Image 1 (tube, rainbow, N blue to C red):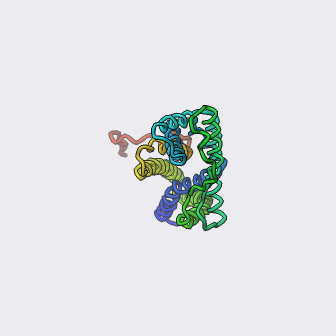
Image 2 (image 1 turned 180 degrees about the vertical axis):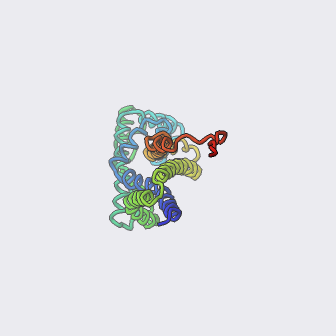
Image 3 (image 1 turned 30 degrees about the vertical axis):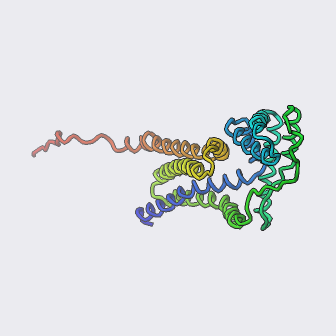
Length: 298
């Protein structure tokens, strides 16, 4: 195979491999990170201490209590302060973890089992713990808070079909995209006329893929916060988004660091390696054009 043809084929294969790197990382993150209930709960657990998240939860819970109890307007600020106080207790951490686990398990079960009904979560256990805490703090009308089985819709039935298709695609892509990217990169390096240059190109392309991945995470954050119906909760939503994408950001910068390190290593070995020194030494000193051989006449 001609060197030019080999280099062209190598460039195409390496470009495809580097293009698949950020998509493979996204698919693996969604499948093995977001789709695992234990990892999801562990990721969300520290947010129970985030002030923005606590305030957002207190606003929603307090509004729901005052709506259910229909208490006097003068007592609503007192109840709101009591709920905010509750979000700073260890009991809230337990409620937060239990709620996240229940919601995630319900959504995942509906996606995997093919149920066509809306995903709902019963808030009665959460309400019971909150009522007990408020009664312990001697909050007026705490005993009047109704503890009933209230099914709250987490995911409408109309969105299940689209989510299920996306989950199936990600489940397949999370394995095959990284494998395909690795196979294309190895093949591209193998067919290249100069393998050191091919490795350097692969490393730089991987670093570029990491940059694109980090850029995609940043753009996704901006778009997510811009689409919120309540701008007052943007700070809490930002904290949740950052927690969920922390692993993805780490992977992106690892790709950048690894790619640049390999590219630098290839450049240094090509410039100062033993083979390069041997080639420079075998060339010998350049002839001096000012010194011409003297002809001897007979």
